[in-house]
Image 1 (tube, rainbow over the protein chains, first blue to last red):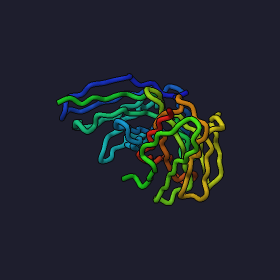
Image 2: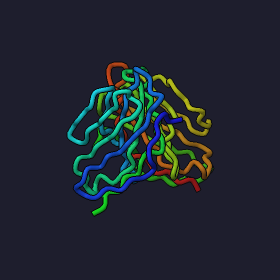
Image 3: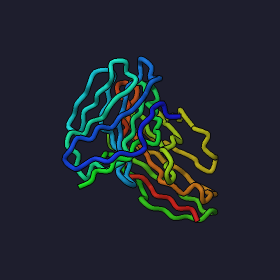
Image 4: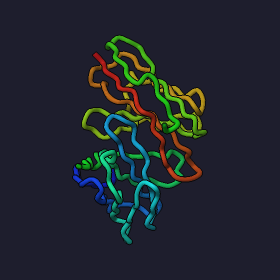
Length: 112
Length: 114
């Protein structure tokens, strides 16, 4: 079973920030938080990952709480092309298998 | 383009047919994965190959048979499938053991079993 909990769906207005929450209260010390997204009928796409510090890249920002039990993915200026299912995953860094366990994710709908 | 290609993109087969799905990665990775995504279900990990050895088989029925002849190629051989096997089959690759677990996914093969 996935170790994360996400709301099943969210809406966001185009041009506004989309804030997607994730709970991972049982995360262990050597597990990272990964975010992927899947646009309809395509393969999942990596977005960002982090351990305990906040991270930012060209796609998004990741805010992890100090106790690491939850995180928020921020898309600063959502566009219609950001409509997708967003998956929050916890996984060990540098493991020999690199397994990712996907849950049901959050379906983000960006509306004009 | 993610550097992971899959063929065919769409496949329709009868329950008595034998077919194969192909995946190729051009990223120099050392691990490859097969996932199954049924309608309205999360992605399910089927097989993991790390350094060309199968390291995980998540209780997948024997009618699915993976093959990894080298680190760049991965096949999924299908035989005597059932209609409930209709799904999107996704291949992914990553570089394990030396850093993060970022997986790169192919576009998938949409399989329909009649």
